[in-house]
Image (cartoon, rainbow, N blue to C red; front, side, top):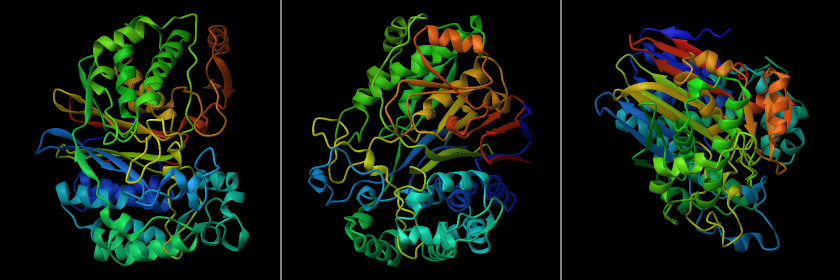
Length: 526
């Protein structure tokens, strides 16, 4: 079905239907988009625990009707004070799993407090109620969680705390079996009662650090106490007359803007959507953007990223001129994680939130902190041990981050909120969705449903492979291969393409919501 859900007052989209319903329930209780977004975020941490959790990070784009501007919140954590390359002597890279990958402070809980205190109407107690209920009473074990548990079962057996929760009595829960997370419920109740400081400076911080130290971890109470996210100005460019926004570095968001700048130099109305020319042009525009990302992206506190040049229209023209329709370009790839959850909320006042959160890999580090129910992220494993790499490992540093929520404005008002799961695939899927909506007039659901591609790797072996969904006509695949793409035909609606969702607000004020059929998501409108 290509029909989007249409609401006249509000819209919530997320990759899990229970989280979307939770956000809608907050709106019905008098909360605004910011309250609902935090409720969705917390619910995803419960009902999509393999993809996200309070041991991870988040990034936010917000539009407040009172401010009438887009703001960004960086909810990513820094490395600990005791973290350095010396911790990994004799190793070529930081381990992607286990306690040695737990080297950054989780930033998501801080972001909840920041968003609610700045713009929320309800208390943390109220917005955490749905998440606490699902953690306490349980929810149907989803198809996606089951598939990812099967995929990662051997890794989950290594840490006895995570095995106790996710492999109860050594067994993988069945699809639709009631899944309860009592320890996580208690943690969320404590957070609701005592707030952010309890997590970063109080009892919970002490319990987390004690458990991690017992397992050989290096994070300290000081690291947690010193953590603070920050409000920043978003990055922006224009595309076909629309104002396009992304969060700034350490996020890879500028890749999405660069790709659109390159594509704007072409008249896409002369190119059929879904044709060889369409796929080739998008892939080649993105590759050139990735090439600069791989050179420059890291914590901007440690390196001056030349964003003015990278986002200039002139630079985009130079990049576009190098694209040849009979030749695919090879570039170096980076191993970026695939577990992520994007969601968006728009309320009837006109407030809008597009946000994304992650543990990095599925089930993050594979380390759960004692009896807290919290899986710790392995985001810090993306740092390089090469001192000459711009993203080299240093204390108190944020790493290159794949998370990138997006928003487009029309006449200074929110028009499209969009994003997706999928590491390297995030800017690729975003670019496909937004061009289909802006250049080809598709509604959010049709744009998301249409066949997608993902070039390169999410994590695993380095590859120049271009994965394309099986619904793409074979003659187009042949043309892509003839141009030099290493094409791998995958499933018709393959989960490797990520879980995307989007909201479009039309000229009449109606809200059109679309969610990915590759996910367990739902669009809930009023």
